[in-house]
Length: 379
Image 1 (tube, rainbow, N blue to C red):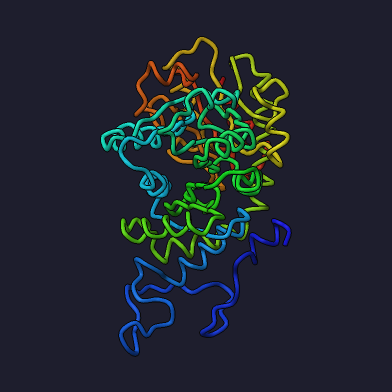
Image 2: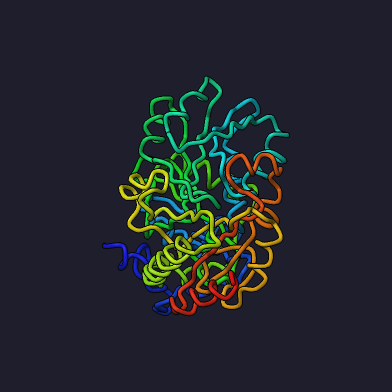
């Protein structure tokens, strides 16, 4: 199956009970048994649920994996990956990453004896400098949030394989429409399915996809034992969203390009971050590992004035000032005070997340309306 067909049919089949084309919402906590252990593959919905299982099959199909897992949030999915580790283990992480991931790493798992190294990975060779006998996981986010830095997944995978450590890739910004990390050598793909996979800003969910059976078995055990699952209603909504992922992403990419090019010529803008520009760091790697450049655009206003940036986001009318991204509607955010507020100012400014940075999640509205909205807000 080609990708566009997979979004609709991948891992899916009509429901066996009545032939429903869309998997029904199995809103049940438990399942009848004919004798102890005599059931149809489902006994308790924390462990398995038919609607969630259909979604997990779809996740696996989209990423060309063998096993998919659905969680109650993206952070719950990351939490499950980190529970593969033991006290004393070390993780090498992208230094420019989602603030919630940074918070989970530093405020929760550091307290359990896990050591984290936050490394600039634009040159993937830098990763190897931090590998030692305690290293168990390399965590890559590409494109990164909100700097849109590009990391060479294949190069990171080569280092991971050489040292026999796991490579996990947060593929939220790219989606499997643009990039498929398992095919580039990653062991685990993670998504905040809240974003593009759901696509309609109406659910919170996380996803993991793997190929290796033993790794999948360990993660399924953690999923069941820790219980951070999604409910069947949200699983149904995510399944519905996935069916239009390909057409939505095409428009996100088209509009993202138009917005980035407009901002790049605006006199009040200092810098625009978008992987499609030829002068964007690692643009050549983006060309090689991504199908297109996505709908995320970040920019910095001239003078790097906090109040000026706040005025811009307050004045936008079509773009909604809100947390999150990846929905059909265009959103804007101010990372320093919103998504990355949990990262100390000194640390976030080292990686470029300055006070005047604005992050746009470019939706699928009419391109002209989006550009006119930015024009009036910038003044």
